[in-house]
Length: 564
Image (cartoon, rainbow, N blue to C red; front, side, top):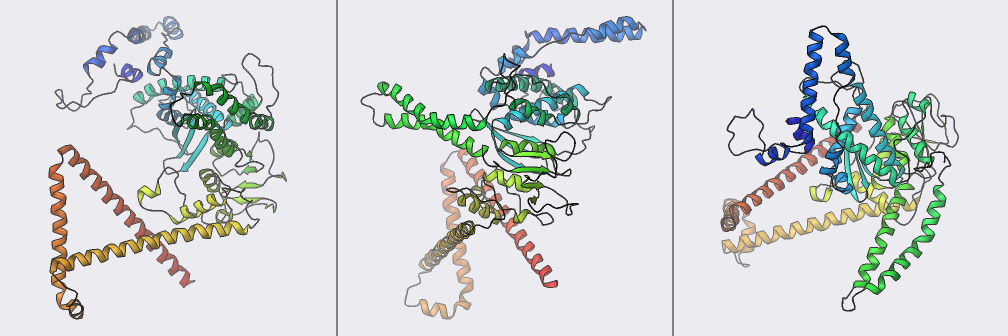
């Protein structure tokens, strides 16, 4: 019953009173009635009977009967469930976050016989994850990346839907005993079918056959993602598998740019007769709708040309699969150290080499040696930033998460301001290659920092004015006049207790006003207000902790510099 609930999307509920105890799982009666006549129940019963027959034959030592039964097990498909749960393709894309995270997790598990997870399942997850990454890379749909302790976060935009998933680091995974793999494998069974359908639809949307046929040599060398990229670049259309000609990206871009204006004008001409005569602003609405596709094409073009004309080479110690996925998604050409790579380390056209060890056996003066974080930071701001802070052997700057809104959090890191300066510097011009020394870039960064300092100065002035207002309010409560104000300032040390009492009276008055306001609203709104106050207090404490850590780090760094 639990397996069927997982496959059908029926989730447990938390009742107000648990009659059978806390160790039971509770469902709504209408959900169980919905599952009572599902055809999968009969299939599960057939599987249960089949297992009993196999067990009985093995107990009677009838090996022939057991082999015949094992070769003909009852099977079932989940195609009908996919259509039931996701009537449209957009619904499937919205529910793809957990699916991709689960599939990538099992794709990283060790494929060892005798473990709790079958080797075939792991290979299938690896194939599905590489097919998804190849599509995202080919269509330049990747938008954000972030390296965390849990793994690497990605966010892509497919058909207007933002999809975020997490991939584990390329480390040796261990299957622990405190995880119920039966439940996870049930979820995985459904997610494999779902991702297979999604990949099929996406591949056919770009006129590529599915499932892809890969080069067996590259598969043997564990370069499936590169093999998929080559397969998708070959331009094999459905119904014509012999067409192996390369698709020229430059020609398609030029054709799109030339026909973009004509298509917009034709669309406006066709829809102009449908405009209501008495509706103001209708033409403007149509113009905005017609140019929405153009702006979307501009964003895709910006992602496609980020690493254009740049050639990367990956050393053996960097995360190869992640960089093989990210760099081609933004228009770069990439190779790696090992068999099956498209070009060697000695290629003179290489512009950047991604390394993560302090010393190199041979250094080429015609290229930049940078750490992997440089790739992720460039992707998050969609600009090629200078490599000075990412040189090998130097401690890289803080890795800023693109998924966090710094303004809402109340704390803006210093390096986030620097990255914003790089981004604003390249809005109207192409960013220069690192190391060429553009003076305008430095001036724009200085301007961004000065704007930030000016904002902080204005904020400080507002705080001073607010403090002055509170002091005047305190004087008004005490009954202080302007004539004896100078006398109060002279002996202010003697009146410290009175000032504290006045401040306490002000605080008590504000607290009483808040209590009165809370008593007027309903209990539900009161709870929401308290939750908002708790959230704001947590944010303030978090910001204060970050400031203290920054102050301690700066003091320790200055102490080390003095010792030297």
